[in-house]
Image (cartoon, rainbow, N blue to C red; front, top):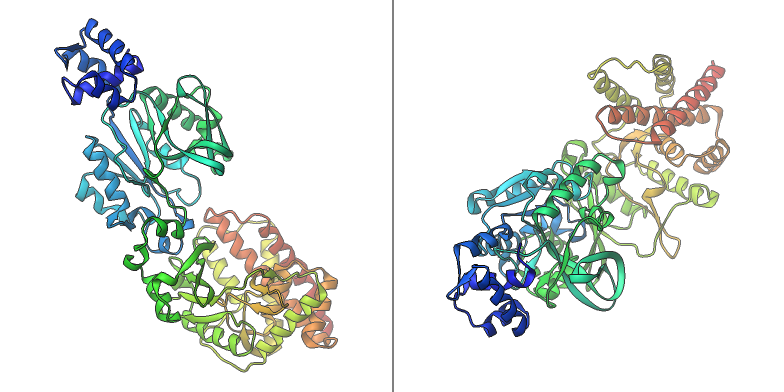
Length: 589
């Protein structure tokens, strides 16, 4: 077993035979006296002879040889919206080079050819690297549901003397080496306060503690090196703790910190500017001022074409909403602040974008949603005004609810027609048929509930109530109220020609209104006390809304999704108002 100083001297002589002691000291960053002592010991042990490394010396170095590298490239990179909506962050071209390609080439330049990429989000974008560089591709299909411990778990059997890297780092100097003394985490120094993961070290630079935030401290940044002993223990920890619910949201670094006493790792310092991680588009533009001018992005082209700005004007970009349906981000130009909405995969099968555009235009003309600027009717991307310091509607504030009801009335009386239609009962039947494809619905009481829904629908149909343009996702989170108390009703994806009571039913269920609040909201909608027939019809739509979304929840749960408390909320409103509405209709007979 070599000492650290012996390793450093032997490693220099491996690449530079007959190097002078002064050159060895400069290359290994140890003192001239220390080099002299280590060199004498190496010669005495037969590891160095005539200024070169002997066969025994090569054998002594073998345990320190880097075997492979793992590059983590599965994440969503949500903070890099909107560019990450189009391609993974690691594939961005910075200073003329693709980030992950530059890193692969640096690894290969150090003699590390066994490279594995762990991919997930937009994984197919990375496949070309197999042919270009001979890398191995491993898929992490849990990239959206758990943190990066999932990526390392999938390659735990590959961990040995291994570099673990992030696909989106940019190293101005090649940090990779063919031989490494011990497991390390690379670090950079922060002058003054920082929110980064700050490192405390003990004897021999061993990491003893890591805290989030600190001051005048070395902090974690960039690549990591696992040696065999570290990899062996860490792989065991991954296996032991992977299935625990609390592990799902943890970074692999969290697991390391929790077991820091048993995982020997040192701090490897790097000068400022060598390691570069970009947490935002604005940070990247500081590093590469010409990035936006050269970026191949349809999203930025869309923004420029609609707003008439230049790419270089676009700044202050950050995500507002990240999910598996629509993705939205904030951005600003010289003329103001905006929101860009990027449609999620598969939404083209669910949403009639032409109908949404028609509804948006009506909403803007009526003053219901003046945020709207433009939506592409074919592809669904949209640009809207951003409302700073806004708040959502409070469904338990009677004056705010009254305002919302009058907005609904204004929409319903607009006499505008769109192609799309939406009906709670028909949607519920569709969800039911999809559930039945998975097997019988053997929930106790389900057959009676379904029969009551059928009966109620017959009563509702006999009302011959008017159909009109409805929002159909009419609840508090889709209302914005600005600093001047102006209201905006946003997100018109589910709008369509519907029974006028759809919006009322949705509002009552999704805002979880009490019976008293429901009565007050209904009076606010009509501007008077409703008739018995109007009351029956609108309470029926509370029942049908609850029933529809209850069946949707059952289907989602059957497909493996977790709906949570909303499953019962939807059922409760559906069942309670099925009873109330049927009583009102039967009293009329």
